[in-house]
Image (cartoon, rainbow, N blue to C red; front, side, top):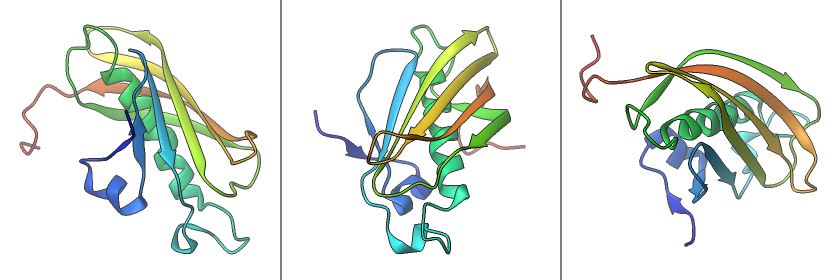
Length: 135
């Protein structure tokens, strides 16, 4: 099945799409690295790369079989940048541990050549309040 546009407005703005993967994993594609998503090098802006890492981890958390919610929010995230991101980018995330309310994940982003340009680890909280009710 081809990737579908994302329902999150910010991800649609970026042009990111999610591929189908097995439970506890996620794969997010940025098929086109548009000029406005780049820094002065020009390479992918760090905020774009961080977004891909964050979404790949959150989506892996919610895809885990038996996940208590279909939404997970970031509690903390640690990232490392190794190389400039050039061309289309792919983020892959996976769950490394989970409980009833928190999930720990890791992710990496690869560039068009397959080189890992950034990696991250994060903790995510399963969001149980109905969406739109933030108080």
